[in-house]
Image 1 (spheres, rainbow, N blue to C red):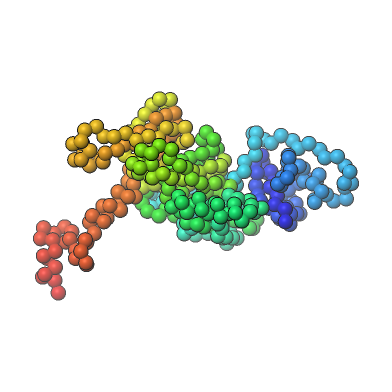
Image 2 (tube, rainbow, N blue to C red):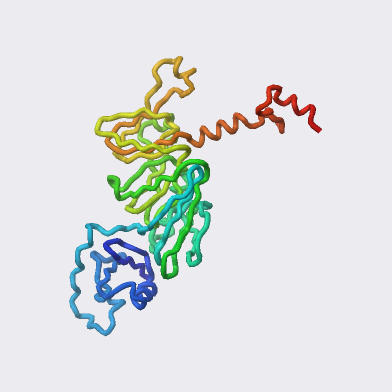
Length: 338
């Protein structure tokens, strides 16, 4: 079964089956001049000139060259609209046109309207339906290595009109919308568990740290997440988010846990804290993340590891005993309770 892509308003949408294209043509969504493409084609073809969709035309009729795409190259990822709600515990509501899809981390969905179909897939869902089984296993394996689930969930609007689906953040913080086509190479490097959801077509892969110092002491290990494509992606981080644009040669020293994401043009290295006393008693550890521009970086005020550490520190350490928070005498107060 062929897998087709459709050019609408200069952007690529799909993959669709032949039956879906025919239904769209009958419903007036497409015209004979709508451009189509599938694997094996060297260029986009007008729908009326594609043999599978010709009606009463001679097979010997010459094909007209496809017109240039508006704004240059066609967008591969689905084009979605969104709105972010909330302050400390945010969620993002994604609006999908018919046949548009969003892909999300397993378990991130908050609600969805009637007409949206949910399908669990291996990997990140960016592979086309024509992709081999090995491609799908490789995509799933990449996600497993980066700390994510083997599966992603794809949400597709199957009815006419706009429908909405919402995805919630897993802990207090902020959701950061990233339009990947606005960044050099369409690539963002981020912490391993940052991904929340994205437009279908965005690839969630691996980024290996080449420097041994960064890999061992950078807070994220050898492997970080790499988001690639030309669509919208949403990442989540803790506390308040700040963005920094670094000029060429401009540098910034950051606590290793506070780094959320950076563009691939930013040089990421590790710098030791000056002085043994500062390293031991300063409370900041022995290493900083040293970022050098040009490029864009995103920082978080409350890394989840720091939040988890504070919760563990305040939690009972032995059995079911309580620290007696707020009481001078602590656990002794329990002796006088019934």
